[in-house]
Image (cartoon, one colour):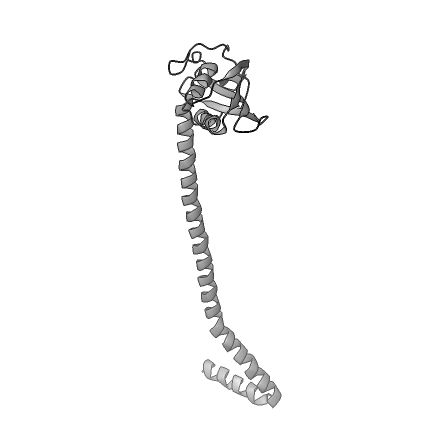
Length: 211
């Protein structure tokens, strides 16, 4: 009975409206119906877009983690190699340089000079300067590469080259550092059967990481 009265009231209200008011109500009803249809579609589309964005962010994060793993593995390998290198006691630099020069035909060290040793962090740093006079460029470069690639904790600190004469004759002035951990014994007395050293195990502070 109440429902019938409600419908009767609505019908009466509708019949009392003017034609213009009926058109406005029909337009409003159409808009409301359109919103009811489009709202679920919009919510679903937005959810899918947010999900795709989240998936893209997650994928990029996983890729970043994979790249970081590779970088960390490389850093660990580099640190392990450095630790293994530092585990060796460095040789006396004068004998070491003379031995490296003898490995190349026509090379010999001259004016080997020590510098006062210094300490930096956990390391005692030994420093030696030496010259090669009137030598060929290629054997000198090979000798420098051999020094740099040594398995000892040794670093080339300085290289100065003069080309005063015509032809393949160069003068090299080099500075070399060795890194000795604090608390370890003194550097080895020689290298590969090399002779005595006219320097007294010198050095100066430098980066605790040989080249």
